[in-house]
Image (cartoon, rainbow, N blue to C red):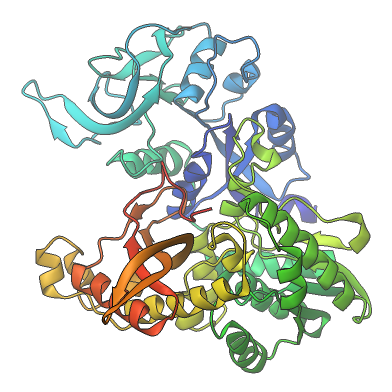
Length: 553
């Protein structure tokens, strides 16, 4: 009876067919205040059955089918259980998801005609509930037009029975399908990406109005649920957390302390490749101010020895991951009653590590805090932030009372400067990079966007008065194992090159390079060359993600 009366959290289930941007769908749904979870296509029935059962603490109110890299015509391509479309659950299929829906319901999908990649203009047809009164422009005939992002080769050529064409483009006559009665919809374009201008409105229409969702996914509610779940899971056991000083681990530590108090012990492993003054920040801000118990293990020489001669960034990550576990394990033996290892794993970590929730997603890079634990640790895994995006982690930190200076720190990779030094690592390179990076970050923090910057198109009008550190999402310096000839005074130099990297992003899945003022870049360059011995050349990276990644590795 108690179970039957409890309040269930509303859930939008996203079935992942391997798209690199599936996580963006979840993020958009959460932006509008509704909880979303992602499950791989081959676990769709288990997920649907579980969330439809009395054992679930969530209520399934809608399903979104993601895009994917495969062709529905291939026998080995991911498929859909057609029973889902007769379950009275509202469904939105996106790109591959639309094609899967159409094929499962008797429509036809073919690999013919022109492919569409990039911007396209969609004309609304059929007055569907999904697109009603949503448009960017209107043509001469009064039809609504949408600016969207396409990325497909296959296309639907025959729609299922009882469906209507919802929209079309010049090259794709069936760019959307709808069955308003059964609340089944498909769009060939991608509403989850920012390039589709009305994409968020389309998702909001589906989630709020068609699925009748209540927008109650907030960080306040998350804290309540997370604290309850952590207490229930951990009991009286001790918990260890590998604290880096970054946003993710700091928020995780604060959340865990709120839930279990003194049962939490943090271990800070100083591998010698941290930002300048990182140890001081950890001890002064996190340990003293927040009152969290921290053990500090200085293992810089051990890590430097282990990385000697290693150039490949993936090898660096693996070595650092192994050494981290070794050092952590040594420290963990000193702590009594420990049964759990907590990690600040968040969604982007899982995405880029090609987590098992998306078996068709290409692996980009590994993360030392993703993918489970070695048996030698003999600890159970606790990941209180695994389902959160970076912006949600920051909101959570603010809700927990963490200061803005700590919460707004730019992300820092787990392997630290090891992956920002290209090629083999030397102690000299680390010291050079620490100094150069410190200069760059401080210049960004002390430089204010002006009205002139706005007039020059470098910032928005509401960004005037903010620091360039605030206006960038991630900024850092990269050390290149490249020497070039320079001139200082009357003498010839032959010294190292560093690259400034600064990007703007909302989700870290895509990113554009920051349009910093030329004067600021010049000031940073002059300061680094004058103040950091060993550098005579500074470059600025103007590549976006994709095709590049944010980090240089």
